[in-house]
Structure formats: structure tokens, C-alpha cells
Image (cartoon, rainbow, N blue to C red; front, side, top):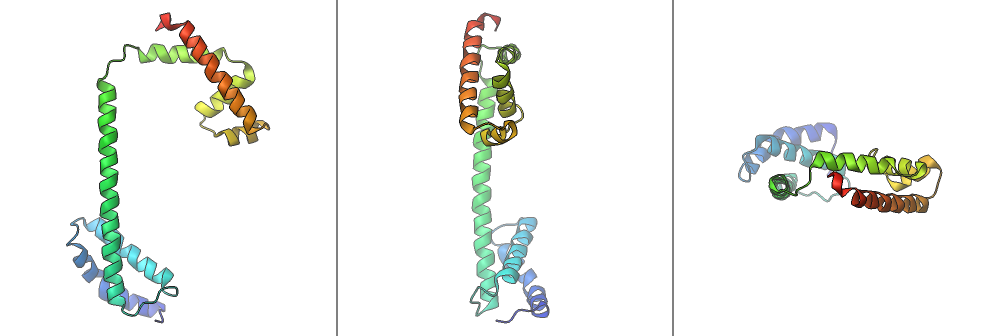
Length: 169
């Protein structure tokens, strides 16, 4: 099949609305339907040379149906994950762990302050600035193994400090 701009425009004009109506069987979400159909036409335009398309109508309807089913599956999975997360957050919020979070954060900050200079800098870059070990290594001009070693030291010293000062919680 030869697909130039005029042919593509004609196919788009002829099939956009009918394919949207067809997808209405699967969902009544107009925005999702239009997005899926747009994706189908983008794929047709980008991939028409690599696809053996004998019947454009069949290709459009099958592609649209498959993409809509994938969209619905992904949306359902996303909603299930969000519901599980919300449930876990609610349980966490309701739970009483007996520790005042503000006091704990102050104690943690005090523990970080007691770390040796290089160890403290690496810990802060990783935990607060959110750099990866590799990014810290590049920034500090040291090896990733050194970063790992310093983080191990930081965790050990912080744990020891907190255990020694639990009376402050």
C-alpha cells in the first residue's frame, strides 16, 4: 500500500469517527477512545512501510480494539495498585507505633550530624538530594565501592546513635 499525505488524510477522515463509535462498545470514556484512535493513526503513519496492510479498515479496527483492550487492562491494573497503596497508607496512618515521628526525625538529624565529614556528605547526597551511588561517585571523583562503604558506615553509626539515644523518643 502506498501511503502519502493525501491518502492518509482521506483514510483518517473516513475512519476516525466510525472507529471511535466502534470502541464505544468497550468504553464510554470519549477522551480515552479518541486517544486510542489517534495512537492507531500515528502507528499507521509511522509503520505503514513495515506492515503488510491489505485491508486498511480491518487493520484500523483490529488495532483500535487491541489498543483499547490494552488501555483498559492497564487502567484496571493501575487502579488496583492505587487502591492497594491507598489501603496500605490508611493502615499506616491508623497504626500506632508508639514513636513520635517529629522526635524521631530530630534524633535522626542529630545522628546524621555526628557522621564524619565525607561520610555525612555522601549520606546527604544519597538520602536527601536523591543522587545514585554512581552520580555521587562521579561528583565526588571517587569509586562506587567507596560510596557503598561510606553508606554502610553511615547506616551503622546512625543505628548505633539512635539505639543509644532511644530515651529521647
